[in-house]
Image (tube, rainbow, N blue to C red):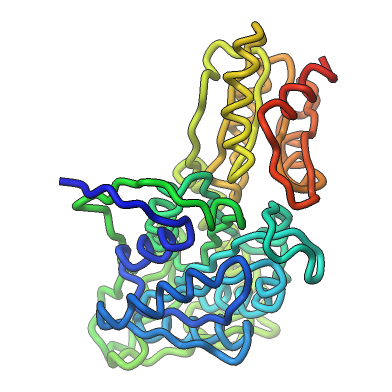
Length: 377
């Protein structure tokens, strides 16, 4: 039997992560993500886990790298300015191939911005914030229930693909309260383990299996390996001038995500089957977009919604299909057009792609979205 609980979005993220097996959290207080740290501080001791408030954001994500290498499922959470500080070591985690979850409860920026108000201005930062090419997974909830479900999914994907997974919430979704169903059972994924015994000299820590992901041995379990942040070969040896190993490694870090785009694409639709106008949205903006669908339909305009839970890797195949079925696409988001660019590229000029955005700390309303559609059409 499932249980129905009234819960805040940030609390749901914490509870979903714990349900998925997270037993280590390191963080630093920042609006509007602080409730995640507060919940983890209260709950982790109850499940034999560890909470640490670190001295800053950089130390927080670095502590998660260490915990992950030691075999513990780890998570940190912040907002835009803190994510900027974490980015260098998010990239390091990607090179180490350390599973972890990084939550970004987005707010208006840049700089300090409007710390208590919602935005969706870190979409491109989630993809390109740390230097270098690599595959990136970023998920985005639009309801409290999705906060819980996608937190579990983020942990599972981080373990399955051995990489840091971003969970992009926002101040509005993070702070709203809704009744959600807590299921009795959920799918839990744990990192793949080496098939050879500890001490076996044939163990190669970065030798990938056919899906591009290497099994992972925990530090302290008898496996001897070098977790290298520089470009390395399958043994973990520095490959500063080994161009073949460098090309192989960097291609694999990209392909282990990009070759699985369809399996990593999570989304929902609303009245899209017969629509001739589509709204593409995500996060809190998908809520206003859902209302816009109903309002437009009441006025005889056949509008449908594609609500993206996967932002990265960008599901271009969904947009390509959509562009062949509708006469116009509108992208609703709380920024100046960060996802609009991706949608426009995927549509490849086959259909007009228009932007509906704001970045003043207010959310998009159904009437505002419909008014923009009418203005264009």
